[in-house]
Length: 245
Image 1 (cartoon, rainbow, N blue to C red):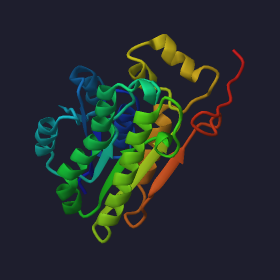
Image 2 (cartoon, helix red, strand yellow):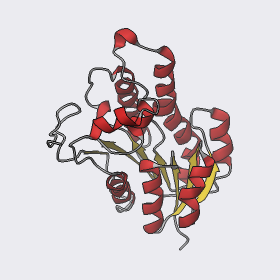
Image 3 (cartoon, rainbow, N blue to C red):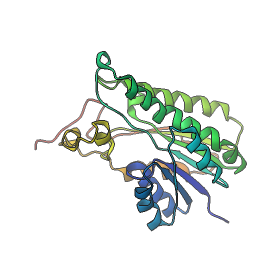
Image 4 (spheres, rainbow, N blue to C red):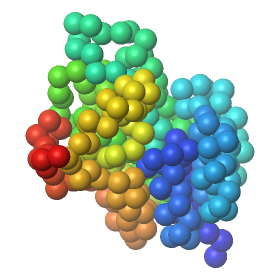
């Protein structure tokens, strides 16, 4: 049998890159998309994945990317992110709008575009990477919290809309994962980003990717609706155990 095709967004680094590698290892034919095409090729070329430019916040980019996908069994909606940590009183509208485009509209656009192919596959699956920020809010996270609560609602609705169709819907919500997430959130300030993880044994991108592969390789009648995964050192978004430096 020909390998199943998995599509991974935001795959130029972090969780998306780890998902691409582990899905290839699990026997999938993988197509990866991201805005940073040179970095995407660094991920894709060594593992034999197909790399294509993709900006999930741009409908034309999504349309062009998805038109090149002949078939799709698994869509991993990974592209997303947080911008800033300002309190609501100091909200920057553009940051909130961008977070909604990345975390809500992007996965919606990708799912909408590939849904006919997922259904046609006879055994499709949408796996969306959310966050514990979609379950609990915290100071300074208002925009990101709202976006992640939003995409969780979208996927919950999709799960119900597809009942009876051969498509599973899974949401994986990680806690603290040490990737480029905080560097992006803080506008490239690596020193500030490093303090987020100080003294904590955070999850790795591979830890989250392993959850994606687990969900994707269950028998087709088994749907992992939702999976929350946090490091042992994290009890909630703001309650962490930090080892003395």
